Length: 248
Image: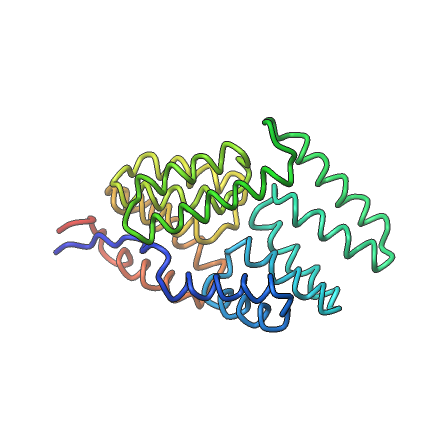
């Protein structure tokens, strides 16, 4: 019996939600944008960019403490997220929490200084996200080779964007390049050990490679993080009990 699940590309409904939220944000309809971003985050809590956008909406709506929580979540997912550090610092400064703001400004400056390249840090971050967005479209269109090229370009500019590294791994998985996918996911988890989506995918890669006990180990860590996550339960159901092989 074949048991070879694969991570699907971003579906059309999700892409439409993201586009709708960004459009509402660009039109300064922050309440509508926030509602859309929260809808996305209910099913995809590990989207650092959407966390950051939700934080911006909350900041513009005067909900500073809630904005900080979203920026903190974005940074937890992507510690090299310069824009999130900067916007966090701005909110803290407005709240009069000047020492915390100084630390965030310094973190943004330090991260920016660590990036080599022809572009200023904020521009390189925007370019990285633009390449990642194009990669998403290629993946949705069933073109993982082109998607991987875009994700690799994004990571040259911002190597600490672990959410993009996870997307690159998904492209490699679709191409059947499982060892390459594992390397990217291991690197993402080295940068952020609580990145649930990357750990789920690493378990899936190990499962497809026949390394079932390692897959179970990673999915058990995921269960400790989010006991009620249905995807975690589904994956563990494949390996709990007698030792299974990816194809029987």
